[in-house]
Length: 81
Ligand SMILES: [Zn+2]
Image 1 (cartoon, rainbow, N blue to C red):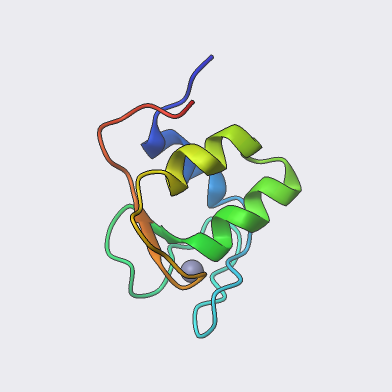
Image 2: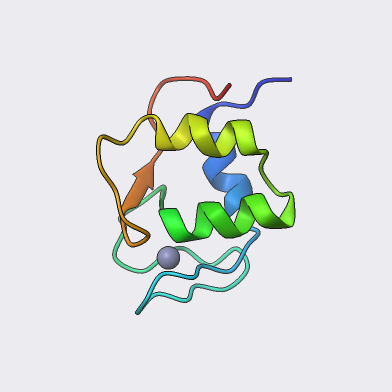
């Protein structure tokens, strides 16, 4: 079943964030990202832990033009692959 980007980002919050100066823990919101946003570093950790799939990680990253590990991914209207 395909998850929306919002669902993928919510699932990624199961992982601790690895972005410098954030380090949000399990289910805590990322610091300074605004509502519904997570750091890209958290998405990578979530993928390694199996909370999101590699395809879902790429679907979120495809929404960003350029990013670093401290970039913020927010839920858009598209669906994850
Ligand atoms: Zn974070």
